[in-house]
Image 1 (tube, helix red, strand yellow):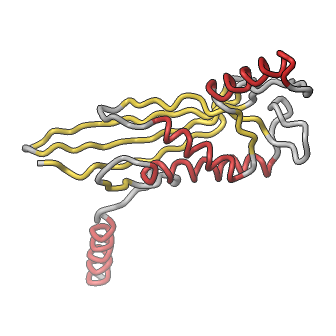
Image 2 (tube, one colour):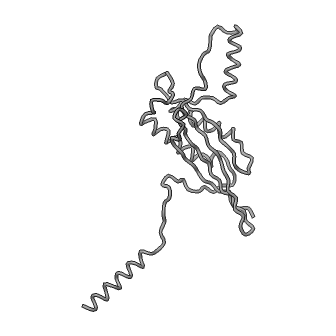
Image 3 (spheres, one colour):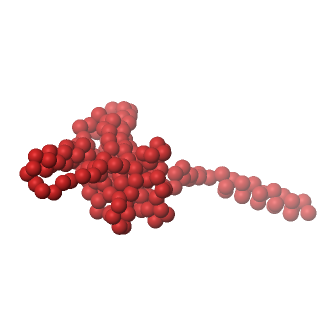
Length: 198
């Protein structure tokens, strides 16, 4: 009996020691992980964009809320405008090129109707002025800035100086915002790291 009790205590101790090894935890199951890169470009931002496209597709499959502005033609599409993508880094980034790539991705997906930015609206205004001057017979009307959804985001950087090495970590965040209810519907982000410079 004494040997059985001793064996049971030793076995329990061995099991407890075996369970106290290193553990891995997942903080966010949708975290894309950290991408290592030499430079910041569209390829580094693409994982967050792809994730947002997937989330927009899921909302569309479920059905948009009734207050979201939709196009009149069939199939109806939610109206979306790409708002500001802010550069909050120490780098010079071509934010307009990233916005153009984001617009191309949304248009190619074909689920939402993407409203042009202010430069596009200025071009429409110029065309209307031309039409109003009697140079064309077709009258153009409509509201090019009618949106129900806004997509906005930022690129941030975090610099760590340690032991003669500088580490640059970046994060690109995107938010889909319901402009009628003034609430965030979906968020996504991707993280990337510039290789260490010595």
